[in-house]
Image (cartoon, rainbow over all chains, first blue to last red; front, side, top):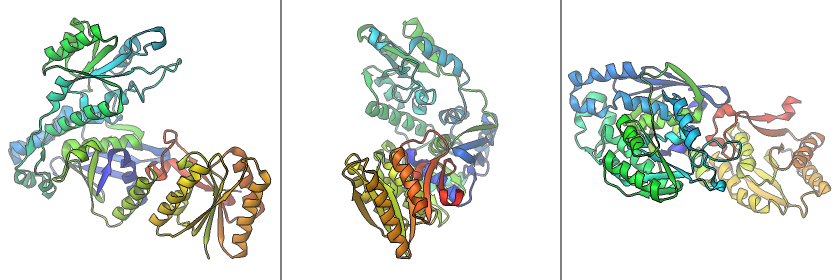
Length: 345
Length: 156
């Protein structure tokens, strides 16, 4: 059965009602094993224990090629992606969180009534998948307002060159190597994006989501930093809006600043903390990202597929995951709750 | 013996539906639902009626939903009369009756609360959101530990 990202707390509720208050989230391959453990606490709080930090995960992943070959290694996200997913869930903060906030204080909160140019956000391909403006509270719709009720930013300026860089469409045709390495679950992953391409798909559909749900200026340009930045430079000079850019690439940021386009580097932590407390909603976000980047994750009573062989564009658009309920009690409860929600929205 | 649910209209759908869903989830699945309505909330009540049925059906129940319309929101005697008659009728027939004091303006809740005790309803329920951040969301998608269905008949 399928469940949308925004409704994943329903899954946590079902597990909680079945007495599962501590959720061990595992990759099906025993050599990778438990990724995180989520403890469902009172008042909607959740504590996430990152069983393997970035370093340990990297070490574990490095043992895979010798044992199972390169295709298996390539299907696993690299350590940086693993860290980015943890940050995207809101459970882990950026290494330079305060600097990014200072940058937004300086360039954001445009006084539109006084005739200031609206501030619009541009995102580089390497951070597009991770919904950072919302995590940082600087999104034009959900961002924190200041004392004069102004949002930090007023919309987005999205470059077509960035979109093209995310459009990989590489698919996994040869799943038998993966099933041998990781388990039968991976037989369901044929004809689906593999490895880092899943991150690309996340970015591509995030780009589309922003275009649908936010005020967006589309900036036509080719791929590559030079083309993208020069298009932003022209936009800032001619549009009466000010684009500010974020990237995980120092070169991109330096080049932007040289072209007088305000830009800031997004720095991920070198390692993730052992433990972090947030909300169930954030824990659900983490499950979503882990399911996508690993392809499949196992929870108590439920296996969660981020990709499966029936997943098509609509499933990506609606941010759906596929659940294989291994316990007979979970499925009726999920179906009941999703039926009610379908009727009430 | 039937389970009766007595509530009133309000302009937010989760405000009407969440207490009932929580009650179903804890095993109190109504066979009859009585909703007090007034011109200001009539459209919301109409919308909620079908959804009551969907929720109760999802919990393997089958309920009749009836709406009692007031002409004025502040027809206090009408409000009191509604609670008195529904609760007393339920008790006369040996049914179990629960008054939901969650939705509506404060005076509605105050009257419903008082009526629930005075006319001796079996339950006087209030749906409490313990944690912030889930306003406008439905029971199924709010963390279980962030809500509480309080029965004031047990508290007081």
